[in-house]
Length: 116
Image (cartoon, rainbow, N blue to C red; front, side, top):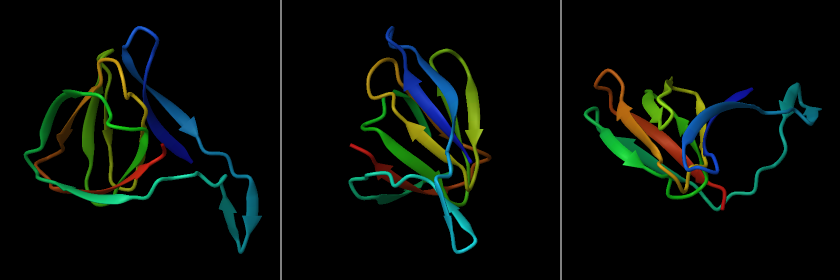
């Protein structure tokens, strides 16, 4: 399973990379990853005109889009549309940060799951 990841390098530039979630166990006709330690979760709704300028992530966290996508741009210039059902791990808590905006004017519901 692929997770999009935004991270900062030692110079403060932000980049994308893909993280492959490894399956470590199997039971009940399902595969499971390691157990990630979290600090809770929160639901978020953003309006369809959402357009947030450069900002670092407030904390390391998973963002899981439920019903719409978000376009994320990192400081090296790469942009990705993270669609509904996709997972993003933001780790750019320092450095130049990233931009995010709504896709196709759609409101978006997502879940934030802080890791630290």
